[in-house]
Image (cartoon, rainbow, N blue to C red; front, side, top):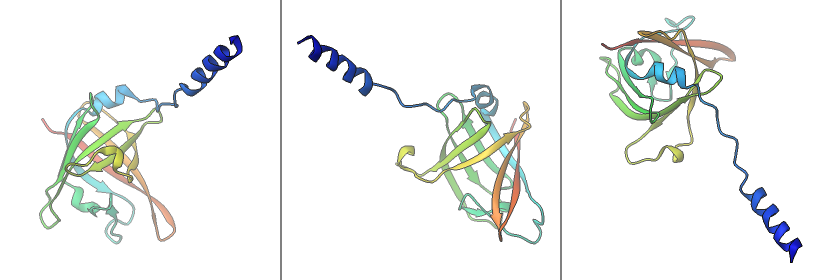
Length: 155
């Protein structure tokens, strides 16, 4: 009987072991809190190469887009509004991991974030009270280039 109880406690302890949790960079998340405008997208040879950002539109269409980051629940929204570009808006979920990467998902209406399989990982850099940058590396014809998304706080 004693062995059964010991085995049962051992089994219970092993089965309740928690999964590793992603460590978050809460300081950076709080710094991103608020309303932002993506003011420019730059990368080498941008006048010759067209890059589709986030599978949504040409990267230049993201200029003047508005972004809202809510840090207490890691949600928000974004909207494209540049003339001559497709109209697009979406809810987002996001977080910043300990490596300083913004992990981002676009979430459609009535869709739970956990069901969205595609996401994006971008490096957060140069965060100040009024500006920050996101760096995204993409493959263009076998070469890796870095896109720089420049954000400025909307006051």
